Image (cartoon, rainbow, N blue to C red; front, top):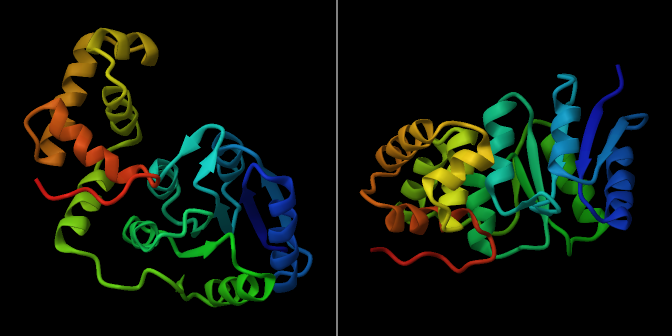
Length: 214
């Protein structure tokens, strides 16, 4: 049976380069191209994918939340992040949050094929960012990984400054449900207020520098 590979990236030319690399390793593979996280999720819902190649920046995502969502919803699906955000902190974050590999977009086709070959053979690939995480860094990612997708969405809306009533309207749930989720978020993140929760949430934004300990 041919391998089924999902390539989620909103740049057609780069998807084409990834397709070339994939077909070298999986001849005859069924490649599903997705321009958004939503399209990639629809493909993953079919339950037959062998690998997901995921860009961190698409129209409906910007940061590490999409990686967390896929790891939560499809734990058996290997996810390889392919991103232009190549800082060692981002690479370490992807590894901590359960990615099977990280391929920088600046890599040439030979490196891409080498990385995909390792992942095909059951290994992981993190050429850069292999320095050990700081204990604080590990702790924050573990806490964020414990949140459900709904809780992460609420945390994102809290980070945007929305009130409980506004969050309830956007998510089509009751204000009491929002309050219950926020209480659970505070407990899981080990914080006592919205400001502290937002500071932890910023670890999922790959465009920000590492958070200082508080």
